[in-house]
Length: 538
Image (cartoon, rainbow, N blue to C red; front, side, top):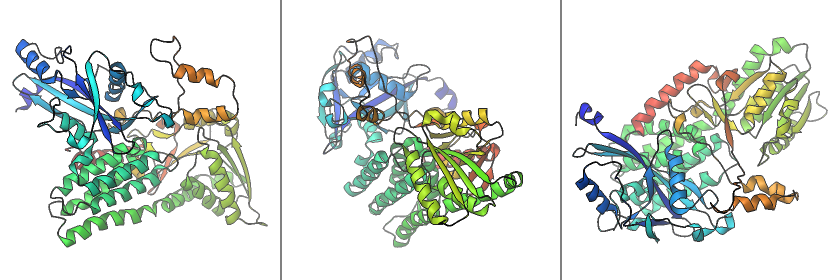
């Protein structure tokens, strides 16, 4: 098909949302399309084509699907369709997996579709959900049932066209042997449930899980395709908000593995090479934090010590928990001719990682500078709302990064932006430094698909309940209200990450030294090139 003919196609983006129950053996809910549905009537002008496609879909089993509206993201469309057709909301389901989008066309009618598959997980009553009782289908469906995802195919199964293809994009295990699929599920679950480790640690967990998958691919004749798709799922469906670091790490691994991509893993040398590549990258990861510590020490000696020589105190504001930042602060302080380290740490709600960070810093400081050392630590933990007070008089604001955009913006723990804005306002000469491995730089153009990670509101509400805050029951009651039963809609937001603009950042401290925005942009372009090569064609 020529590019000219392709450009003449009328394009439509569609979401396919699969609802799963993952308590025990995973099951997928499929919905029986109603005879009243006239699907695609807005797409086709020829009545014969309309009738054909309507007949193909009527009465058949399908996921929850619908078109992506103009200026609407695919995931927003998926949530909207889910609520419209089943009444399910964040209370009862959680986004479980993204599927690799795919495109197909029909030249006979001049149409092209891009399908965005998603998988949602039905929450149990222990998680605050209502289970199956929450599913209330609308007129578009005659009923629904649970199915084993392994039984869904495009042959004898009574499903809509391309049902198995879309399902396979979120339930990739169906294309793997049992041992490999179990290893993939186990790795994804570990990543999904870990809300305390940083992106460096999570990436190490992802690579370790990927190695477990590879161990079971030795007899797979399509192991290279399977490995790349498993890597894609590890990047996108573990903790996607931290996926930039994981993606970069996997691109490095896949780049090295490509040397034997055409060989069978039954070949002993190819088998040893593939596993050796992962082991090599895992070993190299251990050295990254040390290189960043050295970069920070060099930065302070080059830019701060000459100005601060008369001073006796180094004052730093930080938040959340980062072992790299903790160790970098203490190692750099040890090398400076300064007697007092003044640390201000924001508590970082809702999980209070800042308090954990403070405790760890005190312990490490006492180990590194035992009494009667002439080095002193002055540490204060502030509430997040006290960011302006905590920022007064600081020399540096130190931030980690879970993701760095091609423009140099950073996605970091919620509270980062208020801390930086406060510091820049009360101390215009303060320096904002970002500590990060370069693997956290995302590919150019990927930020438009990077959504907000809204987590369980119970994490926010638990301290209210434990402290006896008045009125919590009122909020809970209106959070549970069904559409149309109340004129009050209440949500408790639990967003983990936010963006800090590049213009507020003075330098990026990484394993290669101190970098600026131009260097970040160059890295993002390199990531884009590798991503297109190894993951783009899946």
